[in-house]
Length: 463
Ligand code: TYD
Ligand code: MG
Image: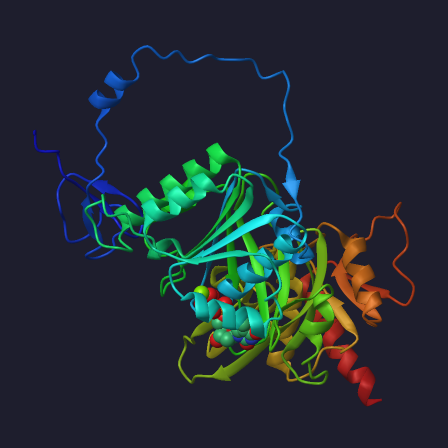
């Protein structure tokens, strides 16, 4: 037999190299290359494809909507874009111990209870362990098909027999092992080959496949990023282990939007859905502390209020540290530069710490105004008005810009008992409905106006 050309693949980024090198050319990672035994051979494929013809069609024509099935967990369905799609593959990633197995067992049980055939295959835990968890969660009566297995051949053979299954959960893809692939369990080659086999099976049999994927220290889905390209949906299950909150976030979705989040709380009885996250995220807030501001944000289609906190400490030297949790560090630096250059607020000699309370992560530029308010408050030592929310984008000249969905954000603030909102000038549409009852607007054109208003708010209180 002719020796197959050997090639190497990076475990972190999936880059392929013809020879082994210590440092990956793709991502710069050290010692991440491993032999890829399933090398690609174009000659063999050309040979095999003889006799097949590919038909091309036009863009117009019959287009079928994917058929969706609700999981019965509204927060999960929302992130999926309205439920699971038949014959699709979903990857759920997250830190160890965050609750992936719990979430998927709960989802499997919910779906099984409505008369659907659901299989849960674990390569990480024994049947007894999973049964104990099911007992604790009160799910023992749900007719889920449970198996503990790691051999791909065994799993695929079982799936061939299970013609009625609508959902298969594999916990986790890293534990599945194919003995025909010459590579250790959990290696890139194994994970990729096994995921491919399972996804092919899902596509041809029409069931939905949920794969649990481990996450590495630096927050990447472990091993091959290639896995993310192979599946239809990538979800991240996030949260701070010290907190109860867990957030299910879409990172990729071929069937829906990726900006929706599902919010859960980890309790003694498993994960509980949080339909109104704002109340929960604000529950631990202490109103009268300097450096805190409430941001009226938007997560997908849903408004969510959250607290942002800033802390400054003088360093004595010219350059302080910046440490950010839950927001973009580059954006914080930009905001500090704008405060310095346009408003004369110099924080260069301070360490700046910024935190989004509750373990949330903000991606919207609309948070600029709330974060600026928290920084100004931390710098002056004057608390922001505890009954006020903030939202608005800040430009490089310090000007404030309106953001989308002003009405939705204001409504949520009113619902939670806030009485005013700091917004960019012109944010409420003059022709649109007035702000909700009980909310007065403080409109700012420039960041300087906010500083003036915050100082006079304090002066007003002392009178
Ligand atoms: P698990 O689902 O095993 O996490 P993963 O699969 O992501 O590794 O959940 C592990 C943690 O969740 C564990 O530390 C205990 C906690 N937990 C609860 O607090 N309540 C519960 O009802 C369950 C089942 C787990
Ligand atoms: Mg697990």
